Structure formats: C-alpha cells, structure tokens
Image (cartoon, rainbow, N blue to C red; front, top):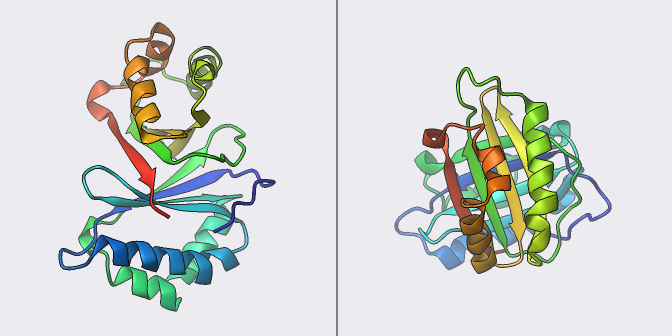
Length: 211
C-alpha cells in the first residue's frame, strides 16, 4: 500500500507468525498484497504496512497508524473482511504473536528501507529506571552513533506494556542492519542505553520486506 508520508504515526502494530506447513510462502505473499489493496488501503489512519520475513522462514506484519484508536478500529473490522479471511487461512493460528507499540517520540514515516530491526527488552529491576533517561540515551545514540551510518533511515523506542519496551530501526538493507547492530553492541554510547535493561529479556531479530 502507498505510504502516507505526510502523516506522523504514534503506534506500530508488529505481529509475528508462521505459515501452515502445507502452504507456500509465495501464496502467503500474494494474499498479503491482496489484503493491502482490498482492506488496509481503505482503513482511515493506517499510514503504512509491510509484510516482513526473517532468515528462519517466519513472517511479520508491521503496521504504522496515526493513533491507537485507528489501529484498534482496523483490528475490529479485520475479521469481517474477505481478504483478511483468505490470508488467515494460510497462517498457523498458534504461531500468531501480536504486539502493539506506542511510539515514544515523533518519527516521520520512513522511506527507502528494506529491513526492520525489531527488539523487545525489559528494564533491570530496582535500577531506578525512567523513561526520560531511556529516551535521552536513545537520542544520544541516534545523534552520535546512527547518524554515522548512511543506510539508517529511522529509529524509535516503543512501549508495549508497563514492563516491556521495543526498539525499532528502519534500515536500507538487511546487511547494513546487521552491521549496525554488531557495532552497537561494542559502542560505549549505545552501551548507556543497553545498560538500563536486563540482558536476559532481550529478544531481537532482523526482518526484510517481502511486500
């Protein structure tokens, strides 16, 4: 679907899933494209959708919306749509893992990207964690680390629940995303942000655009 680049998203739905064993990946991709055209394109407040895949053969939908109300309205109408039902027929129901991310900074709709790095993490217990300190560390990371990478397109932090946050990065290619992340782990500036979170809670993967 066409991106609404003039709109500012405040939420991102990120839903992981797997196809049924006897279904073909190419059929799922086609069904997703038809879902974009026949359902998502008509939903007010939906800014962008990408069907994603990872190197383990899993899939994900990333949906940016202008506000939570628009996203919730879309999910309520989802079950009644014929293209939604056709897509769901190809997906293993028990594999579906939805996450609604409240975006914690103003971010423009990214363009010219083919990879999303998506990770979830939880603050260390009894560490004096604050969202203000987290966002300040994230801004410094963007200004002093990500700005040096020409393939970085957008970066933000999201909130999933009271104890779970997400880090979302839009990057031009999968290779660049992995390279940026590898450098991130050994960078002192990035370490200031990572140090706020429990390493055992980290769940990170790289997702490339399929449709």
